[in-house]
Length: 169
Image 1 (cartoon, rainbow, N blue to C red):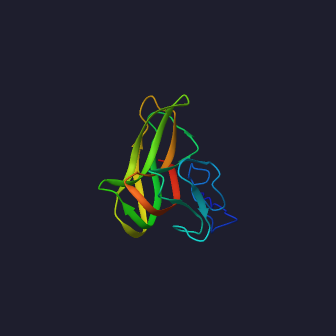
Image 2: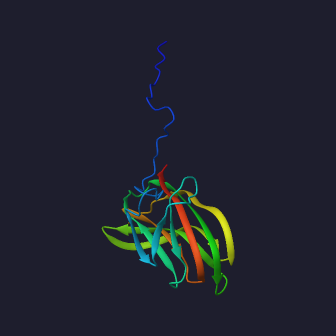
């Protein structure tokens, strides 16, 4: 029997299937658009490696949106991002943060869903993974984007986000 052996020049490298071109914020914010708030790359911290994005939570809600990813109804995706917060103040109860997935059809926004949410809590918290697995693209959607979202119930402090991923299953 023939048993082929695969040769890999770089055995330490792991192939990355992330459909976001810059979800790790290693060097810049390329591919992302600030919709609300002032978002900055933070070089000295990160979820798994250094480099993440930071926003002060003082704009009655903050949102950073990724570039769009072409999808086909029936495709299945997993979503992930990590978030941490410091010195947070809140104005009430409810969801403070969400990993938001925007749905587009032929260039127009047709809706969104929150892949995962975190309840608003005052104070500090280390990295929290946010994720959704097995989301199926519905009919009438041909592009998606990822939103790193801070709801307006968060009134002070700052959040850090990193390792945003969209993986086709």
